[in-house]
Length: 198
Image 1: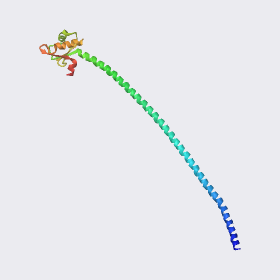
Image 2 (image 1 turned 60 degrees about the vertical axis):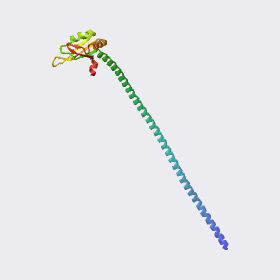
Image 3 (image 1 turned 90 degrees about the horizontal axis):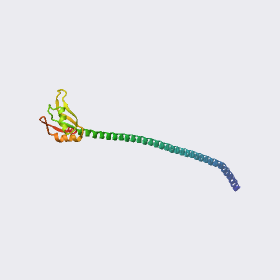
Image 4 (image 1 turned 60 degrees about the horizontal axis):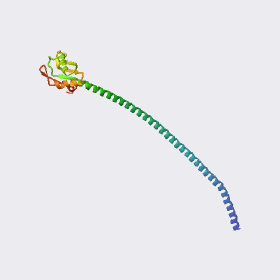
């Protein structure tokens, strides 16, 4: 009977334990479901977060590509403007070169003309333009003889310019008349350009 009691109580204890197990099993399943639900919501949240981060990265890459294309277009426009300015400067340089070559040609022409004009200095006040044409006319055809006159006094300043038609005639006049005498004064005859340099 003791055993029966124990056995009976043992069975009861087994029954109680089985009831508890049955009661716990649904709870455990519910806890498991709750955990699965939490896991599932965590997974869904993680998936959403992944999708958002992927979308953000795609948006960043799109923005970068847009920025790159903008930068390329800016660079192209800068290059075009640089090229235009280079072209303009080249055109200006060409124009300057043309002007320089023209001015060089003009300078050469002027030098040739200056080589035809002689400066005669240390003349006496008695010498006039007709005298100069007559004297210098012995060495070639004289185009013009100009005596420098002081405007206030109306008297010759002591120098004159004699222009020949040909450069070689001017050179001959220099070789014969430089350090020669006119009206008692030793004169100096040189090209006008040489006098200007002095």
